[in-house]
Amino acid sequence: VQLQASGGGLVQAGGSLRLSCAASESISSIHIMGWYRQAPGKEREPVATISNIGSTYYSNSVEGRFTISREIAKNTIHLQMNSLDQEDTAVYYCYVWKPSGAYWGQGTQVTVSS
Image (cartoon, rainbow, N blue to C red; front, side):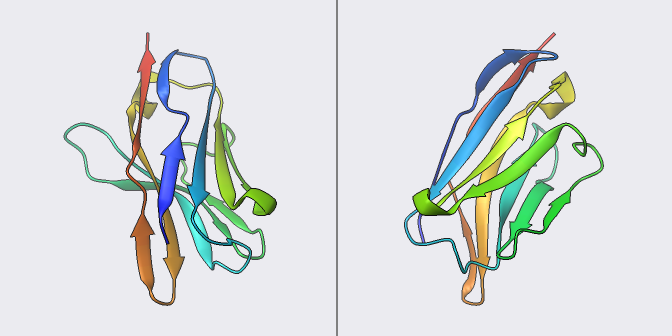
């Protein structure tokens, strides 16, 4: 499966962005989809996931501010990010986990300015 991420950019602290990740195949039965991020000098970390039955997971650092969702008809997942702060600055990667393995998108840069 190929993944195309979009929606990153520059935003002021307190602002919002919406990331999207379009898959090249139907996502209706994909076990897990989600987002990781990697800030400069730091390891890649999980941000949010959504399962094929719609259950979600959020890291402590984003819970209450970020919302992950699926748009099955468009084979797309979204990450709505609100109340952004400078610590959210990172490259955000979408991924898919299937029994055949993990697949990653190319990443989209999110920069939060003060």
